[in-house]
Image (cartoon, rainbow, N blue to C red; front, side, top):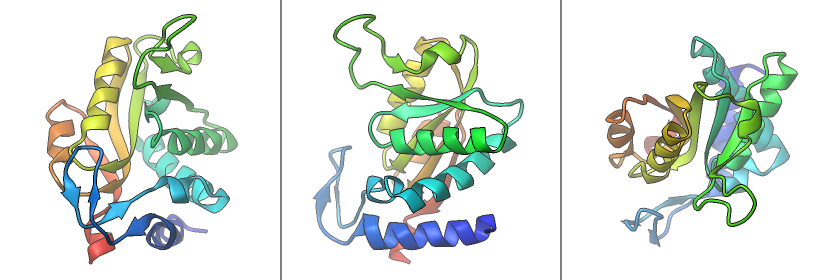
Length: 186
């Protein structure tokens, strides 16, 4: 399948499985009249494959090469996993990592899981499922920098176009999203 076909199919799955037209309170605390729960799609076998192919294509275009992909748990986890799997199958491995919301409460007390194979100074891409205000991505960017990683881009499945892009890019990290609110509200 071509990337255009993959993108069209992923949008179809997101609309079918993840999109809801209803009043909700978002993680940002804002009220909205629509909701996109990307995990409903990214945790399916087909969604995992599509996300991996589409976003790995974006990752591989970032030069010099990126060493890791990840973001704030939980939304970023299946996406980062899909990219890592696809990258290995394509012969250009990019490892994934998970940024905790709180440091590990025992053992090493670490904030980032998966760091052993991603050395200090590595170029990384922060992953996000849905960007609203950018809060989750900003926390991941801050934590990556504190852990001596260099966030060079942020990739998202959906940009709600509610200020998140501007907040993320104000931190010097360009955002690319596969879809925007117009893809759902048309």
